[in-house]
Length: 200
Image 1 (cartoon, rainbow, N blue to C red):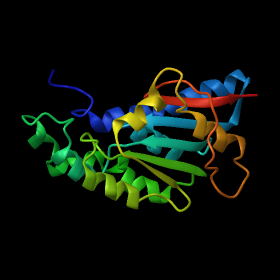
Image 2: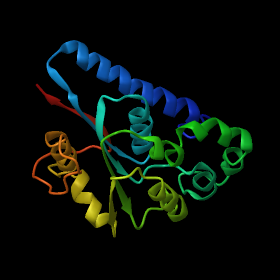
Image 3: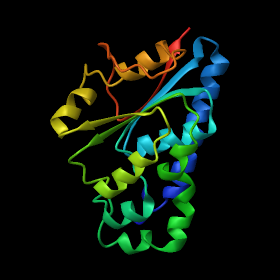
Image 4: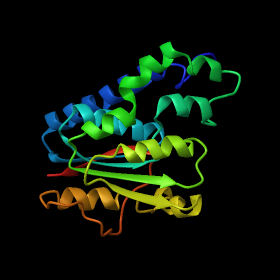
């Protein structure tokens, strides 16, 4: 396949962020969902899409990110997601210029989303450590950050019956408080790129 998610990254991220907005518009029209309590959980590219969507849609009140892709010059040069035989295409200035508007490094500092959490796996070769450090440094004031030392810590979050939505549910429940809530509760569903809204 000559065309895939990364080769069309600019279009893929733009369309995916737009799709999130279309989903929220549809849910708002239904009238049975509380659109004041919208959160997104995303992993990898899904986390990058969550940041992009939150940057343009104030209905999103919380985002929970797991190792977002970003800091594109470094990510393209070092991520193991990129096949070596294709890497030279993605480190060219024209390609990097096209995806730069969707870089969490530039979007996160301007984010007005009230609740943001960044989860980073210590052993994650899809997002190189120097890219992860730059993304962490770009977090907005008040954002939470959690380091997971290995995949074993992360697996329960995404396993069936795991608790990957607990943090989001808590943030939306107590979103009027001044600070993000750090206590977690039980419950949730599994996903590696999901959005959630609370029923009215």
